[in-house]
Length: 588
Image 1 (cartoon, rainbow, N blue to C red):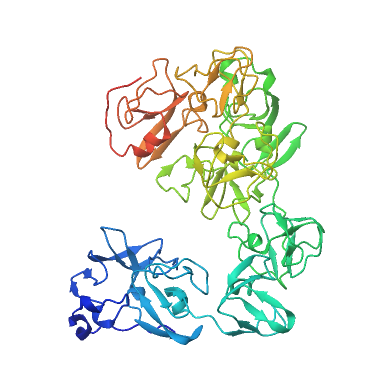
Image 2: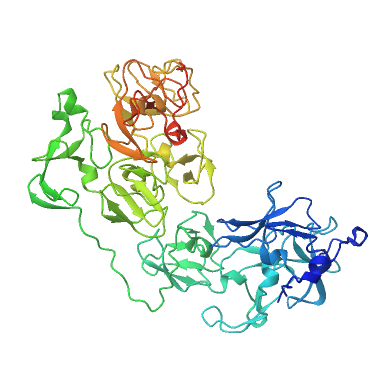
């Protein structure tokens, strides 16, 4: 165990001799000066201040604390450290390395060190590290404070006692099938080796990507196994999770227990739970339903092809806020403005989704959304980061509009020939818009990456100057005949980006110009952002100037301030930036 040394007044008064600097931290050099809330350390050139970090990130150890970090921070260079890391003992005897004591280094590992990772957890060590120069053995401060048990017996994992081997040794974990180079737990009589983190893998779990429970096994058997999460090959000689109902379904152990896939519950000996949920509507008669979002009146099925009046054509669905166009839709038999696409009326009230480890619930009210309490009347979709109105799927800290909430695997994208999957938690750059996103769909056959913002774009839209609808195109589609100039903003277009084009007229238009940032908000809707009131309105023929960026608003809709006269916002980014009204000269 690491001994945390209490700092006495005598320790504080000791001076530091530069000639004795051997890279280690001694009690006499811990504090040179304490002045109020400011701390001067002998090994750091800038003063440190008491600091709380909500992320819990420490430069001394890899531990991320859910309750945040209480410690010290340097405002000059950003060095942040836990209080207990700063007070670590200068030398320890550790059970994982009994041959020699470990010395606390304060400037990181020496250049001659060959292994720059913690011997136990494998994480890269920080500036503060315990090290044995004789054996090139290093521990980060978290592993030094929390030593692993040398002997473990866990019947659910293995029938025999497991022994820690804290040394560099290449092995393949029998539980997860991943290779590693250090510190396995071993059973010599069974030739069994396992990561410390795999010892407590659950036996039976429910995974959001599969409808049945799956169980852990140490041997899948030979065959062409593919993981149901990451879609990569599984080596049947090692452990994984499999489904007793679906004989061809298996998942890597690490993929099955990812935080976005598994809810953290061990279900061994737990009774099965039903996934049944209430239907979204009751059938009253042929073509007439009573929807859960509009219990007071019945809805009648109508054909969008019958709409001829321009005002009727612009009718918007209450769930997705998109126009009805020629789609089948339900309209309220008593209210003039309550309309649902037939597909939106059939949205399930609960559903599994690839972005969250619990079932999502469909909401239709306009309560404050959990992750953005500044918004009232609208919400921000967690996947596409668009401002939306209408129905939403929600659970815990995730909120999805009905477009992103309806994405499932495999996802078929009109502009790509292969199926797409949500396989990784890593942020990637979308191929079609060239923007980085946390939530993406990837192709397992090529390097195609698509973010949710582009995946949910409508395949066809209408433009007032084109008789035929515009089609979504990507990567210089061979059918394009126009030069790449936007019909709305009259700027040259990057043909490598996704765009809309009309096959008959040859016109091309930017996504943002034809749809705008308020594409998924119902027109004339009032909402609040940061206690200011706005209305979504049609853009005028003169295109008013955005009060924040100064450019003329290009999209079909703008946000009009209800608190200030002649205040317009076009891009969503300007609404976010608009904490104070700044009127700039209007630029084209």
